[in-house]
Amino acid sequence: MKTAHEEYAQRLNVLRGQLFASDRMGVWCFNRSWKLYYTTAVRSQEMAQLLEIGGVKDYALSQIEKEPAPSIYADEAGLVWILEWVILPQGGELLIVLGPMALVRTGEERLLQRLDALELTVEEKRTYADLLDEIPVIAFVSVMRFAQMLH
Image 1 (tube, rainbow, N blue to C red):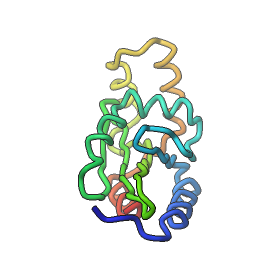
Image 2 (cartoon, rainbow, N blue to C red):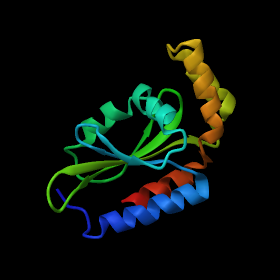
Image 3 (cartoon, rainbow, N blue to C red):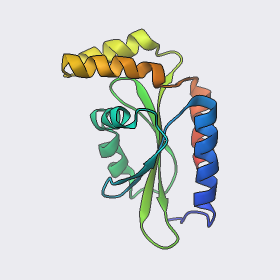
Image 4 (cartoon, rainbow, N blue to C red):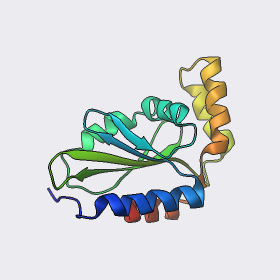
């Protein structure tokens, strides 16, 4: 497997600043045990629940042994996440996750319908509906660009 560039921390710091400034997009950093090191996500506790119910963790762990490259993952609610495992020069791995994002064509109404289909309490559905205002709505071509920038 390829290891991260020596300046990975500096480059990632610049990327997460740019993504937050342009789209208020969250950047997450986990280790293999799913310990969160940092996030730039607004309302991070609620957004972390979207990571869990969306199956991002399971998907990410299924990708860990593959050649490092970004993966684009769409969960059942229609939210999009970009993930990449970073092999550290000193050993170990970190998972970098960008998101959540909603695609322009998905639309808020469709996202709400998908959330309704999930087995959530009324309070959880209300919380997630409020979160939609915080989730950037992006064209798919931008998702591809963000994946390239992460890599």
